Image (cartoon, rainbow, N blue to C red; front, side):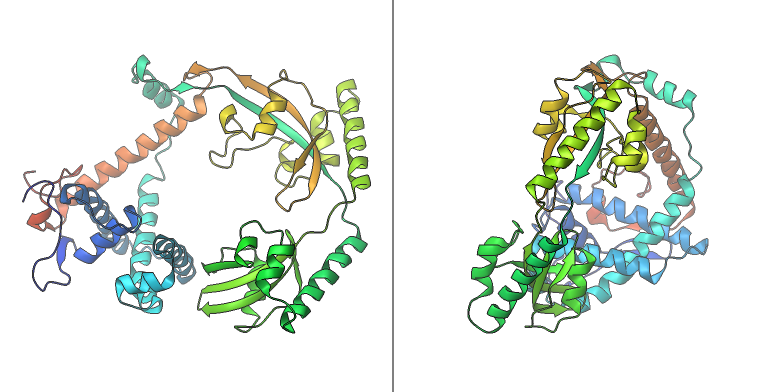
Length: 437
């Protein structure tokens, strides 16, 4: 079989076993589903590249095989939550549930039943993997050894980084403003329901949701768990074709029109309006925050105490105001990844400086004032153990866990019956799945 051939069952074969690992099997359809997810719906990949995905499937099978021997279990709740996320991702590749069902020639309910066992196996494999690598704790000596083995010219270049903290104050929302917005939305809802106007026109005119305003307030089919709980509660408590009462979420006030519900998937439209902070109240917050900044600079209160007493940012209040990078969960930010308005302020500061109050726009469209403290600035450098210890700790830990898993898997493969369809002998494989290869 040429290395760049395309895998395809011949003749009338619809599905077949392409690998056996102990008591577990891998079907051709399992591999093609993995190809589909990897290629985001395109679904074509040369055989030698598919072998890498097949190795992942076989690796999961040996984990599952051992997990069953060790009597590990996963709950139905874990399975259902993961199943919904997987289906939502696959539906997203095709653009709609209809196209998704057309590709598989099955309903989404049938596909859920088929995928459920796959998800349970995946979770079992993850539990087994965690059991194997849980004791793989990296020591300072191992981190140093890992670092010393990296050639100097292979150490990554790190751009300018900063660490910073903040204190945020929001203007209060007056009750009269909240009632005004609710009244306006009630009037819009009643006009639409009575036929005086349409959802399309009113969403374009009034809705403050930029993601749906131009589409009549509508979102295509979504999976349960995508939007805030209040929104989804309104959807599931409202019959198809009907309008919910006005309700409140952290984004403001909404009402929804339910278009369709299919189990844990739904399509709905909404109009969102956010109560606004009075400009005078917001300016009072600026004055208060500037006064607080002066007290901090004068030493009358330290920054961390001020955070606890005055900051209204729930994400940073309990950590001394330190801002955390959501992707790395660390408190270092590459300046290139910072919002331009934040970088503009921090760029002019020295470590320890506290900024003047800065006006920012929050997710709900309202404005707040914030003061920043620059905690540290790390100049561009080639990664080293002193400045980037946490990065090397993570890298060394990942390698230790991977090595432990590979050693475990190689040992288990030698003790377990394994068979791979000759079509997939082209490899390459990282583990000895094929004897003599």
